[in-house]
Structures are given as C-alpha cells and as structure tokens.
Length: 402
Image 1 (cartoon, helix red, strand yellow):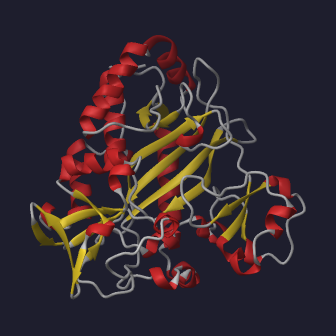
Image 2 (image 1 turned 45 degrees about the vertical axis):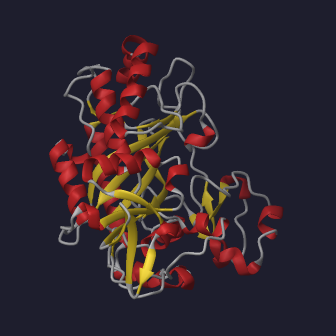
Image 3 (image 1 turned 180 degrees about the vertical axis):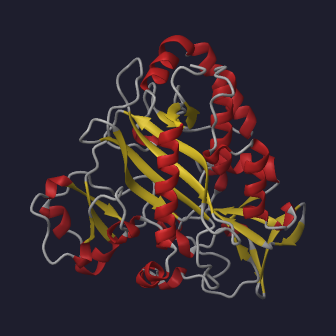
C-alpha cells in the first residue's frame, strides 16, 4: 500500500470537477449508465505488494485445480446443476483479499473469498485506464497485473472468451441482463470483443443445440460466457429452456461447475498462509469456544447475501441439520484502515482476476478490482457514501506521478 500517494491524490490531484469528468468518461466508454457507486480514488499499490497479490492468487487457484481438491468437492455440485464435460481447471478465477495490518505493523493480505467465475473483466479495465488518464497520473502507473499492455490484455480475453469463434457465435448468458448492476461489464465486453449479451430465458433448444434470436433469425450458439448465477435463478423460480445436465453441443467459458467448486466452499480445505481458519458447519463436532471471532457465511450466495457478521448459537441452531453443509464458519478478518480519504480512513478489499488458458501451465493474473469504504462489509451496496465504493488498482511507487 502507498499511503503517501493516496494522500497526495486526495489533497492535491482530486477535484469534484475531475471526478464528474471521470464518471462521464467511464459511462461513455462502457456504453451505459452505472448504477453502483464509483469511488473517487483509485487504490495505489506498490509493485512489491502487487507481486505478493499475484503469487498468492496463483497458488490458491492452483490448489483448487488439484486432483485431490476436485475429488473432495465433487459432491458439492448440486445434481440439478452438474454440467457435463468439465475441464480440470477454471478458465476464469477471481480471488478477493482483505488488506490487514500484521504483527510487525506492515500490510498483509488475508483471503476473503474466491470464485471460478468471469467477473468484471471489461468494466475494470476502463475504470483503471480512465482513472489514470482523467486524473493525469502518468504512465509510470500501470493498471494490469504482470504489466500487460492494453493489446495483450484484450488478446488474452479474446482467446479465453472467443476461442477462435466468430463473435456472433459467442454470447454472454445472464438472467435479465438489462436489470443487472453489472451491465456496464456486459456492454464493455460487447464493445471490445463483439460478444452480445443474451437473456438465458430467451434461448431456444433444438436437439442438442442452443439458438438465440438475432435480427429476426435464430442463430446457433457455439460458445457461452456464463454469467447466470444459480442462486438468482432459484430465487426467481426460473424455468430454463434447457437442462444443465444435458450433453449440449456448446462450449463453456468458463464451465458452470467451477462456480460451485471455487467458492466459499474452498476455505476450509485450502492450505496457504493467507487463508483464515474456516470450518464447514456440517463437519464440526463442536462449535469454536469464541464464536464472536467468526462469521457465518452461506456457501453459494453472492454480493454478501446471507452473511451473519456476529453469529450466535441461536443463528446456528436455526439452520436445519440437512442444510448445514451449505454454510461455513470463518475466522473474522480485521481489515486495516489503510486508505486515506478526506472523510476518514477506508478499509479495502483487493480482487485479483485471473485467466487460465487450456494450454497455459499456470493461471495468469491480469486485472484488479477494489472495494473500499468504512462500512462493516466491503460490498458496494454497503458503501454508498462519499469516497467509497467500486475502485481499482494503480501499481507503481511513492513519489512517481503522484
């Protein structure tokens, strides 16, 4: 973390006029309005800390792709949502770390969550690039992991999402995409890669093939960038025009099974210095003595839904025995107040976004996301306040550019 750069930005570079210009430029770049709060400041991160984030994220994703872990989590994929032809690795992965203060007063990272799911790869590129441009921070600040060039970043996404297909043969599949707050990511990907977003309820199945309507014609779908979340489909009791279990003539980018495998489910089984203690509720013969040091989380919810920050025995007893395998108790992570803002010190959660192509020996960190604020939880919906919300990282060193 770079506190000097963070303070210099807030006190000498930021202006309300520049922030409004940044917001307008961001909406223009992605091609739609942004319905969540955009933080005034990017998060300034040193190259040394960047490398620490990259290494930890790679190691955790590789553990999730091990044969032993996949065997351990086979039963975690609900039978109605088990999709055939699963690859032995996630194509996309995101790993969320809290920035914490360590015993020697240095900054460290602790795992909060990880997902085998494509998330915000388009939107975050434009956030970071335009933050550097509009605030005139200079090219000494990079905004990709591994210091990828813009061209290299989009070529990597092109390979992962299109895999040699024509853009018209690939769709981003989501439930009611026009109503999703993540719509700016969909429109960004469409502008950059030509991948159109399609409502999962609107596709048609003929035999083993899926089709989507385009310009009055039913066009075969060859490859799907899947963004549909099972929890949301269940909440709305959605009846799909196909079954997840079917042998469909379609490729997945990434495969839906990894949404379940790489989730909060992984935390009790990972062996890494960044991972807090975590227990699957169904595997506990007795509860920890200091329950106040833990957080109760449902495995497959998203955006913080269902998380109980201060669980009690009553909360746990209220969960039926048959559903306890769907919850974990995780050691509470104390976020450090490490980001200076004019209205108080913020805490921050940093996301490493990775792509793991089939021919690659290891997952490649490519882009960052940050959530920052002063609320008890880091999600954007909990930090609708000045100098908080959705952000991204700029990598460099103090004294250069800021």
